[in-house]
Image 1 (tube, rainbow, N blue to C red):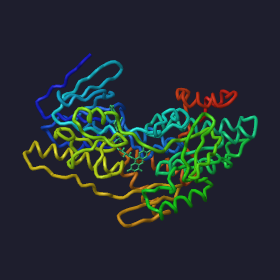
Image 2: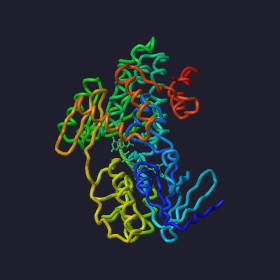
Image 3: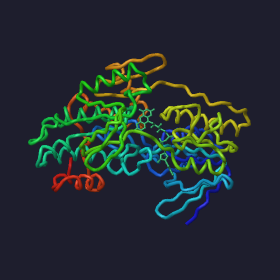
Image 4: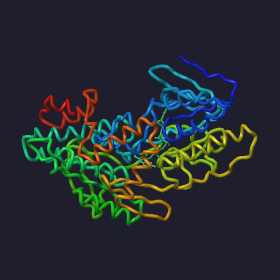
Length: 451
Ligand SMILES: Cc1cc2nc3c(=O)[nH]c(=O)nc-3n(C[C@H](O)[C@H](O)[C@H](O)COP(=O)(O)OP(=O)(O)OC[C@H]3O[C@@H](n4cnc5c(N)ncnc54)[C@H](O)[C@@H]3O)c2cc1C
């Protein structure tokens, strides 16, 4: 079935319900002369910075992924269309999406493309099965199943080697996500699960953080990166920088050091927290407009975030390449707000804002409970103060009052106490189950009901 959008007002189609898409749509809420259609392949907005907390049982997926429809319910000029965008036709000014065999064609006067980026395994997509990335709710739940499941496998192991393999966790990529994941797996093993098993000692879990670069958190500079590394090491995380992964399989991985020496690590659970690849919609835009894309598939946009030769099309967030701006939430939010304002100014017959200027509000990463690193303007600090700031900023950006309250409660349970409220992995999460089932000789029923 093909449906066509009609309307007398200025039609803005927004692709994506992430930071760029949602904040862009919201920025148009006061415009009675604009009709916004937000099309995305998930029915939720996703607060990606806290995905690692879903993966490690601190938060539920609902807390970081509110329904887009609910968020926009009161915005009368906006409607939500669920579907995977399969094509953008710049000539005809249409966006085609698909959901369960139903094709929808949306016509636009202005287009805001914010389809983000996926994980990149640097040309080795075959690694993905054994070392999942962390970009979506599905990824986080998959990893949750694998992480908690690995302790179950260890409890049932019939040899010390099998137990050791099950209790070895490797996180690839020492950027903020990798550091946060490694820190949380170490806390999970050392605090939360400490008393839960009878045959194994979870505190003996071996967490390894690998990165091809020489530093931890390179974008935070040497001092903060060094502080994060020391804190991780105090927690027992084995940090191995200058180590490039060359192979990954079900039972472990291999990496090469700077001298070319290869090391094999037996590890059941691997997490891939390195590399991004922009949405393939970027290539589709480039193909039709002649715009260039960079190595990560991001579209090189004009200074005002428009697609070269197409002032009616804005590309923002992780999909766009402009002046080395980083792939962070604030770039997407500010870019989307700039684009929305530009659309409004054009409708009002006002001059353009000119060049998009990004205001860097700083960046933060947690290492463990009560410990984070923060870089704000010229200020660089770490420890408890940075962690408190991290806590406050994340609470502000979590969408919805209800989610803020429950998140705060879950944080109290996990950070003041030892507990984790979200340890469920359901039978439906089959990939995690299968991965576990294949890894052991016989994984009994208990593992299929981790929680
Ligand atoms: C694990 C993790 C941790 C992070 N931590 C931080 C942090 O601490 N601080 C920070 O500032 N940034 C962080 N980031 C980066 C930040 O989340 C991104 O920069 C930001 O989400 C980019 O926003 P976006 O709108 O461009 O893309 P996204 O937020 O990724 O949104 C993309 C949207 O497009 C939709 N979409 C994609 N393809 C299609 C299609 N074909 N059809 C329909 N819809 C489609 C997706 O479903 C999604 O709704 C983190 C990212 C990850 C993955």
